[in-house]
Amino acid sequence: MQKEMISLGPAGIGSFKDIEKTFLEYKKLGIKCAEIPFTYQAWLSNEQAEKVGLEAEKNGIELSIHAQYWINLNSEEEKKVKDSVKRILDCCERAHYCKAKYVVFHAAYYMKKTPEEVYEIVKKKILEMQEIIKKNKWHVSLAPETTGKRSQFGTLKELLKLAKETGCFFTVDFAHIEARQGKENYPEVLQELEENGIKKIHCHFSGIEYSEKGERRHVITPSDKIKKLLTAIEKSKIQANVINEAPSPVQDSIKSLKILHNL
Image (tube, rainbow, N blue to C red; front, top):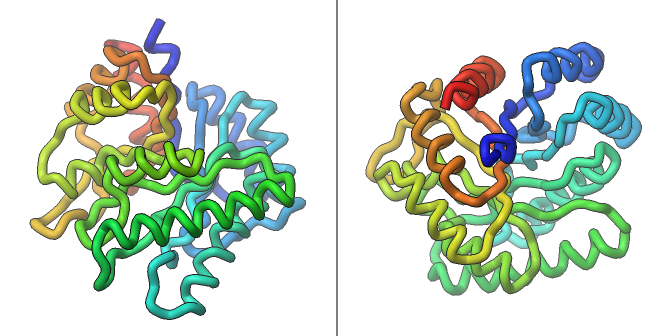
């Protein structure tokens, strides 16, 4: 069943000291994936990450990591670019130890350059980081994310091209795409993915508030939006891990699981 190809879970794993209890509860709820938020700092050591990975594996939960917000591979300041690369690679190291498949990040801002110029800069940095990942034998994929502001690099077309030309993975944030385009278009996005030969996606979802400039903030996910997205995924041939990024991600994941069960 296509329904069985959809895994749901939250952006969050609770505190390290409660990880056994948290993942056991996730398993009981039917949660099959979770994203570790390193959005402000990489707060797990390699040893702790290894413990988290073992507990996740024991409970059938697939992990990913969201890197820090402070990333801009197109900064005009070389130090900020170097710091951005270091933050991403630090997350890749932790991801290796906890067996997380993907490291998600917002790659860049356009700044004063054209989208085409920024694409080439991001592509170069992705290739450089992949060489370091390969050298260190870290089993992880870079997964730059579709972004919600028009000032940011990260349209779906840019990421599809980036994936084809570098072999990286990517993250589809349906809320960000809606905010950036000013409309809800889940079936169209999935169709574009299928037309590009994509068979599995790592994706983010939540309710979202936005203006003419794009994303303003994530909000609780309305049930009708959850139903529309899950219905669209179910009708496609794409396997999907859906990470909820609402202010209450576990509660929204539980709500999503109930909706999926009733489709």
